[in-house]
Each structure stands twice: as structure tokens, then as C-alpha cells.
Image (cartoon, rainbow, N blue to C red; front, side, top):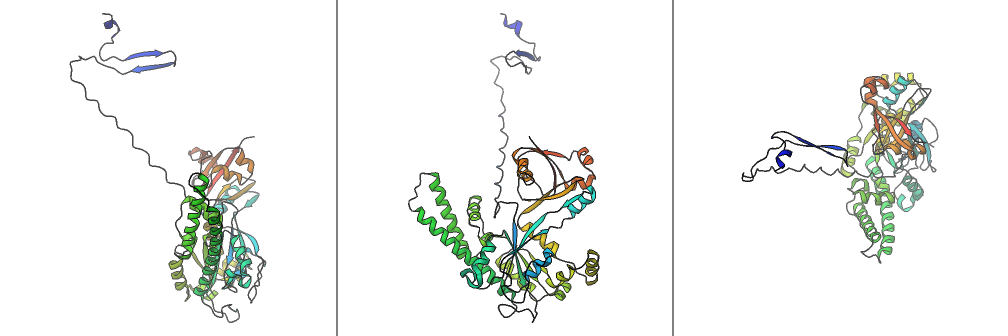
Length: 439
């Protein structure tokens, strides 16, 4: 009988208060209906589509470090030390007309040319300018049989193992006054010698490692996670062995899962290192952009290591240009119709190691900080100081392109392009960062 006093008129909403939750709940308008009425069809609620799983981030081949080095490799007397001297603007490399003039490796830090860095310096006019650097090592020449110790080969290959990438210098010029260790100039033969020696040393290294794993794996069971992990490691090392011996491939040219890459990286294999091929031409051939060996070298790379970069250059020309003032150098380049390739080579080596840079900018200093591609914000901040990583709060990030477009930090901020990024943020090449850290 009393129900009718509590029924809301048809079409009206009802509101009631839940004291526990301190929330007002709203009930949508409703109408009463007879139980004899046919049941209303209830639309089936569709579930939102499942989000596609994010693709697994690929682990990079090589040492997980921001302080990576590239080594200059090749057979003797192809211009390695002369190239190193021109690149570093020093005379550290022992250039001489006989094999093994270089025994102990020399090291130099080479500034990486970057138009963005130059623009930032012009904009901020800082007291101090610090560009990005590439650490370069001059390694002695490798000869046939180096993998078995010929010509101090074991020592030289250990120097190659210590670097993270390779500049392979190839001689494609004739000069009767510069002897060739094999008797004549043949770039294809020289490339095959280097590839063979690096692979043979890797095969020896892998077989020795695999033998040790198998001896320790005889008692492995299937119950513990440690035993399963060890079996997976053995399977990966067997796959590496097959890539080198059956597939006749360099390790870096095979397909690897992230778990397999962790095993590959632990072995520091020579053929896992990225290679940039540098073809040393005579000055005349470089200026006229013609050389009989270049098409054959390109074809060999495409057949054996597709995708590896090839850069022609001339050590003879670079040695002349490096002694000139900037004005004289520019005038000479205009006169001959060719430019130095050293900047291009340095940038190619930097990129081959998956290195990128971000900038910190202000009136005191504009500086480029080298990090590896895929580095998160806290680790990028830690390159400056470990406290910035350990006590990381956030980073104020703007892109170089946004700053150049808008002209000033204030304009970037006004345009809503200055972003606060937290720990998950992955740095992008050319980011400009201001870090905030706790006490």
C-alpha cells in the first residue's frame, strides 16, 4: 500500500546519498511496466578489442656501454696509420713502408661533426663547447694465418676483440713505392683474408667455449631453471658454430632472439662487430670518382655482408688537407671539386655502434653527451653524474627541431613542446635535456 508513496513519477530520475562513500549516486530515469509485457531485448555489450601486445624491444649486439671504441683494421700497408694520423690530426700512428710498423695500438678521441651542435653553440654562445667524440684505435695489420698466430696475429686479434666496431681499410691504389705484403694490389683478396682470419678465430673461440659447456652439461637435468638456462646456452652456442662453419656467415648477419643475443654478447666475437669498409683511393681517382676496383668491392660486400656501408676516400688527399688552415682547406676543396671524407667516416663509425647524442645547453656550456640507442632517461642523466641517475626525478625535454623552429626555450614552452619525462622515457637523438634530481 505504501509503495506508491515512494515511487517516482514516470520519467523522473532518483538520487540517493551513500553516507559511507560520501558519494551521490544517480539512477537513470525509469518507467514501470507490467510483468506481463514481453521482455525487452537487452543489447549484448561488446567488449573493447584487446590491445595488441607491444613488440619486444630488440637487444643490441655488442657491449652495453656508452664508451664504445672503433678499431682501424686491414692488411699491412694499406694506409691505416696514415688514415689514423689524418683523422686524429696527430702523428701517433707509425706510418712506414714495411709490415708491422705498428705493434701496440694507438688511441685518439675524434670529434664527431654535427650541424645541430654548431647551431646550438651559435644560439647560446657558451663559454665552453664540448662536442661528441668517437674513440678510435689504430691496430696493426693482419696477414693470412693471423688466427693461428702468424705475424703476431694472436696479439693483433686480441686488440680487435677489445674494440666494439671496425673501420676496415682497403687499398685500391697502385703505387710502386708502397709495397704490398701479398706482392700486388687486390682488394678482394685482402677483404677475404680479413674475413677468413676473423671467422677462424671466432670458430676456435666458440668451439673451445662449447666444449667446456658440454663437459659441464652432462649432469644437467630438466627440473631446475638453472639447468634449463644452461641447456639453452649450449643450444645458442651450437647455433653460433653453425652460422660460422655451415652457413659461412659473420655472426652479426644472422637472426638472433634477445636471449640468444645475451649469449652472443658474452662471447665478444670478432664477426659480431659492425664493419664500415673504407676504400683508400689515389687522390686522382677520388677526385674524378672513378676506380676499377670500386664496383668489384661493392659486389663482394653485397654478396658476403649485405648492408655494410662502403665509403671511398683518399689518404693522400686527407694528408694534404689536414695541414691546411680552414680557409686554405675550403679553397683547395673548391679548386679540386672534392671534399674531405673524414667527417662522413667519423659519423658512419659513430652510427655503426648505435650511438646517439643528447645536448645540455646554457650560457656556460653547450655539450653533446654520447649514449647508446635505446637508453632510458635516468641512465642518460647518469652519463653526466651517477647521482643524477640514482636520485632521478624527471627530465625537462625538448627536441632540437622544436627549438630551431621556435627560436628560444621560452617560445618552445609557450608552444607546449617542453615535456616533462619520467623514468620510462627512451631518449631520442637530438633531445635537449634539463635533469631534475633529488637530494
